[in-house]
Amino acid sequence: MRRPLLVLLLAIAAIAVFAGGLAWLLDTPRPAPGASRAEHLYLGFCASCHGDDGRGSWRAALFLVRAGDLTDGSLVGQTDQYLFDLIKHGGAPIGRPGMPGFEATLSDADIRALIAYLRALPGARRLTPPARS
Image (cartoon, rainbow, N blue to C red):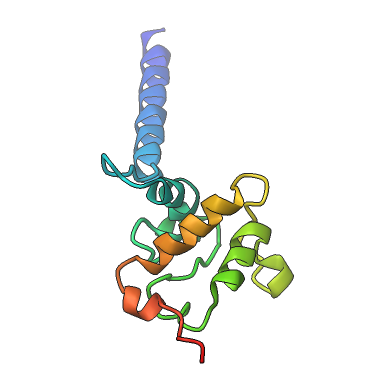
C-alpha cells in the first residue's frame, strides 16, 4: 500500500520540477527599473520571438517560428511606415505570415515608440534607414 503512494508522490514531484524548469526557461525578460515605455512594450510583445536584444530567440523555434534578427542589418532599407504596417497589421499581407499583427493591442503612438526603440537596439547604425534625397 505504501509503495504505490510513494510512486505517486515521486511522479507528482517530477512533474512539478519539470513544470518549474519549463516556466523558468520560458519566462519573459523583465525591463530594468526606470525603463522607457517602448522598452516595456518591446519586452512584453516582441522579446518572446525576437529576443531581449533583438537577435532572435530560441523560444520562437520551440513553436517552429523563425523570428528575424533585428540587428543583422535587414531593416536598413525599411522605412518607418513599412515597420509601422508590419507591426500593426502583421506579416501576412506582405508575405511574412509568422509575424502577428498588434492592431487590437497597441495604439499608433505605441507602435511609433516601438519603431524608435528598434532603431536604437545594439547595431543601431545598421538599423537607421538611408537618407532620402
